[in-house]
Image (cartoon, rainbow, N blue to C red):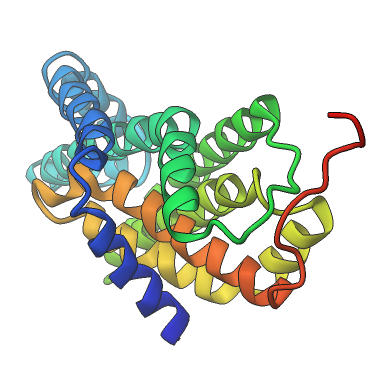
Length: 245
């Protein structure tokens, strides 16, 4: 998938812009604070809740209390990390991505006409609904984590899906028409999910994971705007404003 590689390389190049780091560090700081707050005030409740639910309650009933407690602690920390990551993704999608998009589009994609509706309400609804579905999917699949290997695959897949659902829509909201957006999301669904998978892996790397949402937003902006450019093949360059304006 060379287009995905190009998007990632361009994202790294964009990080050389000094002002970009204000946007990169903002969600990272909020995510860290959310992680600390959840760990201090909610982790014990998460662990107790998990211990009372099957299959951990079954393990306790079978006498393997130590194993049930160990899995509950691991699950509790996983919930804390997922909640902190989800918070950072929502903040990035709603507040940071539009700022990043404005700068990146002006400097690297000035030939792309803005033909989208750029509805703040629609983008916010897309992000919030995606986060809700992610949370439901995360909780529903939690018992499956006991299957060997599932604890590695399922969180990555769910986070990759969330990245694609959230950032791809917002990256196209300003420049792509409704028809163009639907066409691109359909044509590029596999590369977009793979790009979300790369961001999901980064999200699980200590410290670097705090920067993952903004890095993902940058990668999606570059990927989607370049895909839109290729779709149009340079046919649309500017928007003609009505006469007399």
